[in-house]
Amino acid sequence: MKAYILEKYGKKQVLSLSTLPEPSLKPAEVLVEVHGTAINLLDSLIRNGEFKLFLPYKVPFVLGHDFAGTIIKVGSDVKRFKIGDKVYARPSDFKIGTFAEQIAVNEKDLALVPSNITTEEAAGIPLVGLTSWQALVEIANVQPGQKVFIQAGSGGVGTFAIQLAKHLGAYVATTTSSVNIDLVRSLGADEVIDYKKYDFSAILKDFDVVLHSNKDVKVLEKSLAILKPGGTLISLTGPPTLIIMHQFNLAFYFKLILNLLSASVRVKAKKLNVNYHFLFMKADGAALAEITKLIEAGKIKPVVDRVFGFEQLNEAMAYVETGRSKGKVILKIK
Ligand SMILES: NC(=O)c1ccc[n+]([C@@H]2O[C@H](COP(=O)([O-])OP(=O)(O)OC[C@H]3O[C@@H](n4cnc5c(N)ncnc54)[C@H](OP(=O)(O)O)[C@@H]3O)[C@@H](O)[C@H]2O)c1
Image (spheres, rainbow, N blue to C red):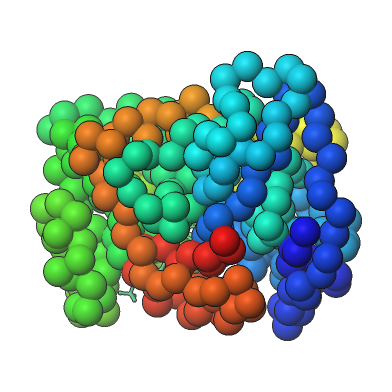
């Protein structure tokens, strides 16, 4: 099978298209013929070497965190899926590799693709859908009438999270630039702030939940300040907390590093009487199956910016790295 491998870490590295043997199958895994994959900033961060501490992938390896495709083989212990099923997933960490014609995936990571969307649309759902679900449902437990601020509403996460928060009954505020105002409004955002013209922290107050996805520490501080007492900020961009230690089974000395990294934000959150959470999303087929139901019920629609061909992977990654994509960028494989 053909797959893109990363041979060396580095910002300027391109992934090379190679021929690899068919992936071997463990008893609880299925072999999937990949029809489409999505590009995530996480792929670029891993390529750059920025995640080596937590995710020490040994080169050469196949990158890629999202796929939709068809099952072509099943392991002897697989119970819930069969050959021919159309499935999608964000495979577990250390089992990634969706920039490929085939991938072996544990059935616990899988869900059936929604019947009312295309395979390309489905390929863009798992990572951003699960991120939004884990933030808004599992951590924040968003309730009807609550005020939720979702940063970067026009991005991959933002376009999904706005729709999920609206489905949960929240009042949703978001930031975007003027070109994307109509898009985020069409997804249901109640209040849209053009971040190039206005400072959201001068406008928003008494929010219950913030989904923070900006790398600027000043934006993080401003986001904490718009929460009401008892409110919750979930950061997708750090600083990471001790949760990572358990998630990645890290050595004990990481406790000190993680405590140091997050000390300042935890102190600020405590002073304001608000909660700070760091989320590094994880694979979860059961939650993805809930997302399938929401898409099939028409509550959430996929937003796809561009579909690239399989031979255009490096171009597609460069496009996502501009930070200007609207919704998801997809690579069509079959
Ligand atoms: N921790 C996790 O588990 C996790 C999971 C998913 C994503 N993330 C992280 O979350 C961040 C967002 O991910 P994503 O996939 O949604 O990114 P994305 O799709 O690349 O986001 C692109 C969008 O961001 C908007 N944008 C850029 N700068 C902005 C700003 N200052 N204010 C408001 N909007 C802005 C752009 O709109 P304009 O063109 O209008 O500026 C563009 O539409 C990334 O840093 C990613 O690495 C983390």
